[in-house]
Image 1 (cartoon, one colour):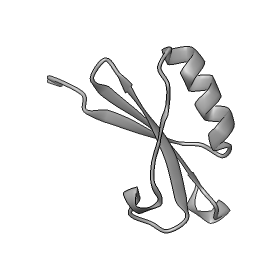
Image 2: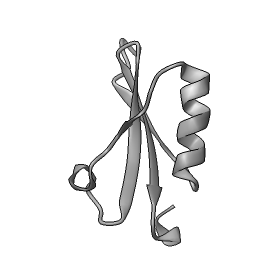
Image 3: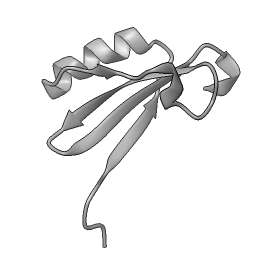
Image 4: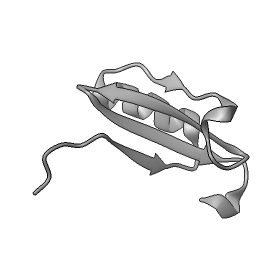
Amino acid sequence: MIKGLFGVNIAVKDLQAAIERFQTLLGVEAEMGEEGDFAFPGLKGAGFDFNGALVGLLSSDNEENL
């Protein structure tokens, strides 16, 4: 049985378009991640704190990583 949810990461091709869409859907402003926040070079992302659950959007400069 699931008792809680910490967060979900979603891989996207166009980070800026996804940020705009999720801001509208969730009604929450995105917080941009820093380059050092990610385990792999070339990743970039943003996160949303949605009532205590984190929704992360991830994109890569390298098409092979998505």
